Amino acid sequence: MSDVRRSRAEARVHQIETIKSTSRRLMAKSGAPALSLREVAREMGLVSSAIYRYFPTRDDLLTALIVDAYNDLGASAERAMARCVEGDPRRRLHVVAGSIRRWAKRNPHEYALIYGSPIPGYDAPELTIAAATRVTLVLATIVADAWRGAEKGVRAVVDVPIHDGMLERRGFERVMPGVPDVTRARAIIVWSQIFGFVSFELFGHYKGSVRNTNRYFDFVVDEMANLVLPTSV
Amino acid sequence: MSDVRRSRAEARVHQIETIKSTSRRLMAKSGAPALSLREVAREMGLVSSAIYRYFPTRDDLLTALIVDAYNDLGASAERAMARCVEGDPRRRLHVVAGSIRRWAKRNPHEYALIYGSPIPGYDAPELTIAAATRVTLVLATIVADAWRGAEKGVRAVVDVPIHDGMLERRGFERVMPGVPDVTRARAIIVWSQIFGFVSFELFGHYKGSVRNTNRYFDFVVDEMANLVLPTSV
DNA sequence: TGTACATCAGTGAACGCGCGTTCACTGATGTAC
DNA sequence: TGTACATCAGTGAACGCGCGTTCACTGATGTAC
Image (cartoon, chains in turn brown, purple, cyan, orange):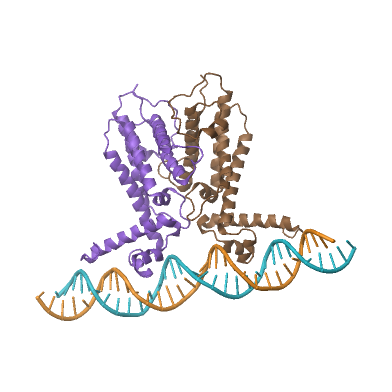
């Protein structure tokens, strides 16, 4: 692999990939805030200044890692979604939520990078937003599809009036058309709950109250399904 | 204040307080991972090694800050709870949840210290657990009181069987006696949801979907109340 | 197909900085008799 | 109440380390004619 003849452009892409994967490996040891360009270079057998041929600054490397993490998580949710049919929205929610949780447990430091405390002194640029949206879009699609597939006249279990200015209307009209306002608002609860659960589990806050986290996660997802899926009655 | 004559013991307590409050101030600038003993000493007009008279190591200072943060948050939830009567559990939940959220917005870096990503290379010792439990105890008490106050025969809105080994029974029997299993499990959802909300709000994940976070928070707490409070019918 | 020049990856030395922790010390405060 | 000794807060110098970033350089790869 490593002594293959490559064009300059190919070699460049390859080095960028190596820098990022080395960074990911180092992050797994001591976390994102401690990630150091010099250590990455050392690991790769390069002199520290060589990294600057590829990333003009440490923040740019972090940004690339963040975008990659969002995309990786998003892609894994999309794949999970693709593996199950539209007809059973409850199962879909379980499968997708499970894939999010599994990704987080497989990549705890990348999860912390995007859903943990912001790194001091670092501002995420706008371009991370598109990548961040992918996973939420998958969740929204499950709800939207479920309501599209439901019979006319079906209503949310408990309806309550939703104030006009509470949510950003624009996005919701596009992503969840025809879904009642209250269910849109509850979809955000579901989203927060999934990531709240994963954070609590990963960061150790369930110690002492939840014993079987797998079973408990199933329970939580079921409750969340009850909150946003149309009842068949 | 500062040139008052003090006994050695008083002076010691005072210096420890000053070190911690200086650390909190510095954390607010650049976050916990970047907190440095030398900078704390510099801010206090001391030589860096002087700090070691009070904290044998940087980790011990961090531990003290973590314990303080948990206690401060716990105390503020307890005070909020004390300000409202037992008769109206929904209002109680709103008041306490609001106090948690307000504390987090007032002390974002201390919040990140205890509910954000764990600090790499630092293990929280056992003694943080008792302090961490205070705020959750307040939430549990609201639910327990509501069920004790409810008429006999009231059931959770939607009952589902709960597997025996899912939760750690011991704590729940003591803290929420007489509350149905399914409601105990849902109480953990409520707890996760409140902190999930606060984390998402603080770390910027609601940008683009929630416009009025105050109103949305009220909505979320109402939904959570529906989940765990006995219905009066 | 061959040559001349431009591009670019990687080097090595340096700048200026900050960190946690140790240690022998001085001098003030507290304690036992 | 006074003295002798122990305790302890704070000093200042040092150890050994790591960091991000810049810059002039060498030598290999690519491109235009």
